[in-house]
Image 1 (cartoon, rainbow, N blue to C red):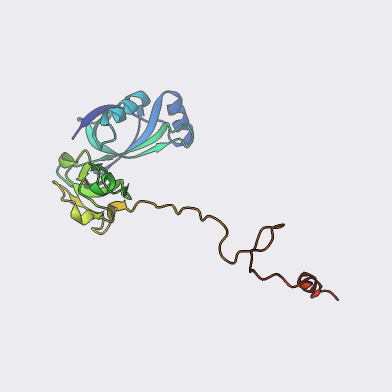
Image 2: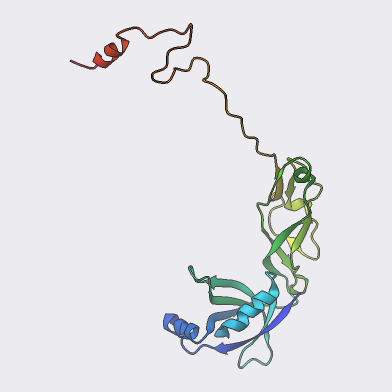
Length: 227
C-alpha cells in the first residue's frame, strides 16, 4: 500500500470567494474530516497531481501535514471534484482514518487473460463492473482486484461470489456480474430479389401469374370519402 506525503495549509477564507482565491494561487481547496476532525485547508495543485500520477489509479494513503498537528494525519482521498470542462481538480475531500480499523472503499477490477470463448469462438468479453466495494484494514488495501478470465467460454458469467477475496471482504452483493462472454453478433445476409407476394416497384409489370388490381379500384377508394 503506497503512502504519499503532502503539505496542507489552513484556509483562512471560506466560501466561493476563498476557494477561487486559492485556485488562483495554484492551490486546491480541501476539507479533512474524520476521527473527530473537520479541517478546512488547501494543498498545492502540482504536488497533488504528481501524487495521483504516482498512484497510477490505485488507492493510496496520504500523510497530510497540517499546521498545529504533531504528526501527519493519515487519510485517503475520499472524493476529488473536477471542473466539468477542463477536468482540473477543484476540491478534495480527505478522510482521516484509524490504521487499526477497517474502512470501506472502491477498488478497480482488472480482468487477466483472454477468454477461450473470445479467442477460439469469436465471443465478446463484457465487463459490467469496473470497481467493487470492499471492507479492509488500511494496511491491506489492494492495488486492484485481479481476476483470471482466460477459461471463460461463450455464455459464461462471472459473479462477485466466485472471486476469492484476499485480506478483505466484499460489500457488493454476491450476485453482481463482474464479467460476461457474450455470443458473437451474426449479421443476416441481404435477401436477393423481392419477397413472395411483394408488390412490384412503380412502373414495373406484375410478375407472371400475379393478380392484377381491378380497374377503377383506386378511383373507388379515392371516392369513398367524397360527398
